Amino acid sequence: MHNEHQLRSVHNYDPQSLHLVERDRTSYTIIKRVIDILIASLLLVLLSPLMLLIAVAIAIYSPGPVFFIQERVGGKQQYKGKHAYWKRTTFPCYKFRTMHVNTDPSIHREYIQAIIENDLEKMSAIQGGITKIRKLVKDPRITRPGKLLRKLSLDELPQLWNVLRGEMSLVGPRPAIPYEVEMYQPWHLRRLEALPGITGLQQVRARSTLDFDQQVQLDLQYIDNQSLLLDLKIMLITPLIIFSTRGAG
Image (tube, rainbow, N blue to C red; front, side):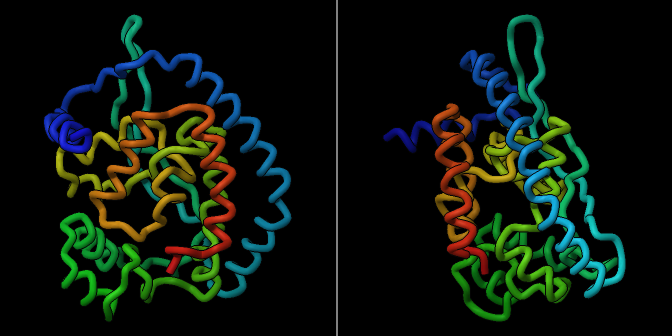
């Protein structure tokens, strides 16, 4: 019964309007931001030797820029009087480059469309076989070191800089690609009602093993139940999920 009510409410969502934050989370938002800055700064210092090695490996195996900067879509909290609102925004998202230079994104666009539409036949055709993992595993654009970086999510480390800039948080729904958002059903847009994160509830619960609607439902579950305790649990579980490589392809 709860799920039915939730689905009815998200299907009534108006994507053109700013969505009013129902609960006052000012204290949580401030503390979460302080934690983001402290932990992101610490990780950038501690992981700098690893990030340097990754940069060298990328440069050796695939000449070109070390970083891949891509426009992503997320939510940004804004205020009108005493009320807080979420507004859709775009920002440059930083990653280590895992693909060859100047690759065609059409194969990824097609696969994203198949995932959102839950078109199993099309997904299998693009993947070259049936797989339970809902991500493009056999991607000809990926370099040799890129495969390992993606498997261990090390390509996401530069997003710690996005966290420091305030464009992302350590925990939240993953930032979407603009052409992905164009394919969303109206209720999918509710996942933009939070600062996008490096990791999130969907990543630790499923990591690309559920269909798209189920992934979005996990993002909405996080948005509706945000707390410092939940964020802490997700951050602590994330390394275990990454090194288990479950759902990584």
